[in-house]
Image 1 (cartoon, rainbow, N blue to C red):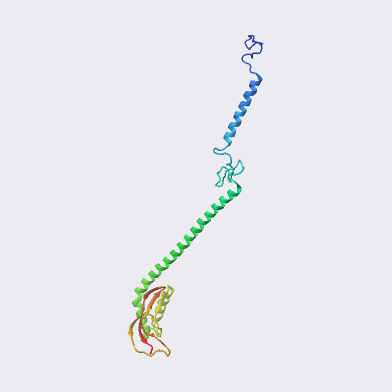
Image 2: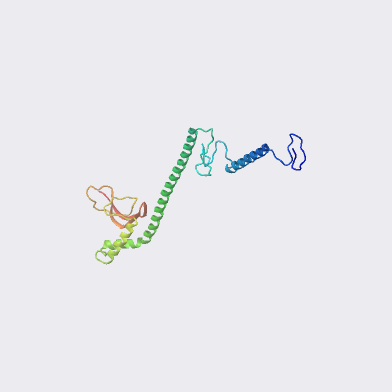
Length: 228
């Protein structure tokens, strides 16, 4: 056998420039193996290991979204009961946080509503205090009969009605039992009280009092008499 230059070659030696069939087959197998390894490396996400799979791989612990890491991924050695117990504990923690936030919101809303009522009553009380001289004049005019048929009677009634819509309550009526919480006794007189009356009673209202909710703007100034 001669090589490509025509030089004779010893028996059993491979001529120069000629590859054997077995060498070609081995090279092709190595190239195929290397290509398959590269494709496997390119298609497998970094960090994926035993017991931790990606969406497209499937299997236990796979992510619930394509390409994502699931919060509940677990190892291959973790039993289903352990996974359920861990997820139940996490759900209970979330529920506890939600209930706490709801309670905080309810308390906040109650506090805001209470503060709003306090501010509103304070504002209305300031207006009533500034109107006290006018309201006293209306009361005196009504007692002496100046408002009986005059045009100012309708204006006085409207003013008192408007104050009533804002929660203003007038205090003090003749015949009431004296209450030091809402009455201020300016005079103590002798008077005939209804039969069976006991204690001290209001005989005359000198200046009516006013109250807004729980806030007393002014106590009613009255004259009183004791039951015989």
